Length: 455
Image (cartoon, rainbow, N blue to C red; front, side, top):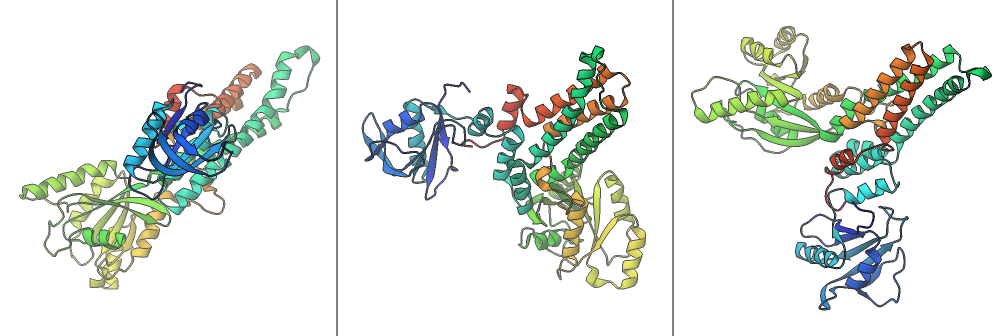
């Protein structure tokens, strides 16, 4: 974006609604607003809701009645001159308002460009900018709380604390190197290593939050697998609390992938029901079985359902061999049809696996299964000693911290002060990249391309 550009886009989703908002940001925003908005007041007051008409100034044709709000830069979201036009939320009205704003000097904003401009104008750092998108896309309370924490700057604060320690270490090292004739006393070796160890622990702690952060952001892909007629579709229905899958006593009922997202203890779980795994001459069912096996590779968690009431589990054990690299929960379904001795036998056969007994028909064991999914997916996420607002959620963030950690480790192990200083500087550079103080246009384009237009 050029510094002189004025951009515009709907700030509310396309579709029918009571209110639609068109945002204009840039140096020409007030001038454009005066052209396309007719109001009685002689001047546009800042942060005041003005009532008037949105018009095409070439014909003075009224597009809609509505309100205008002016936010003077830098006290605005983007840090620039910002005007919002509030109109009725019909898609045609929004389209016409955007068109008339563009005809009078603005251009259509790219995805995430308002937030990108807020970052470039110092209204937020890069981790906070990324969190804006995560707040919008959050599908559970836990994901929203985590994203809000990053938007409020908790993760950035932790990064700055680690940077301050590195600066505290670097200053005496540099002074010692630059003025050797003065006999300056730097940090003792013990204090030097102690500070670097503190940074090392802090970086490792943040890196270890990536798996939890990614699950909160994207959800966990969960596949329901098992032989035909073990209750996979019944399990899906009871987890979703609705009849999404056909349930019938005949094997081979499910032939396609049925997918939905459920909220389990605040985590988005993308759950998929699949065809029963067996050899079949039915062409359509065989396609479903093949699709089920293909989905195994992408799945992050597998709910392997078996029928507790059968006598022979050898085929189940054989199917589990293909899942050795996956997180697996054995769901021993139809437990209402067996006694305690059978349950003990199943526990013995599947020893070493995470095992939950359920009866999808009678809604038994489902809460225990949810607890198991939660624990298996993210462990002790959001425990009392873990602030979800400090979770990292992108590979960009993870890689920057890993590179900083490599620099710190080299500085700790190097016996040469010059090399130690260079590695500490390298770690500081990577942390600067993390918060966006050092970045490239290519990285910014990739980050903000994930945003919706209008934000």
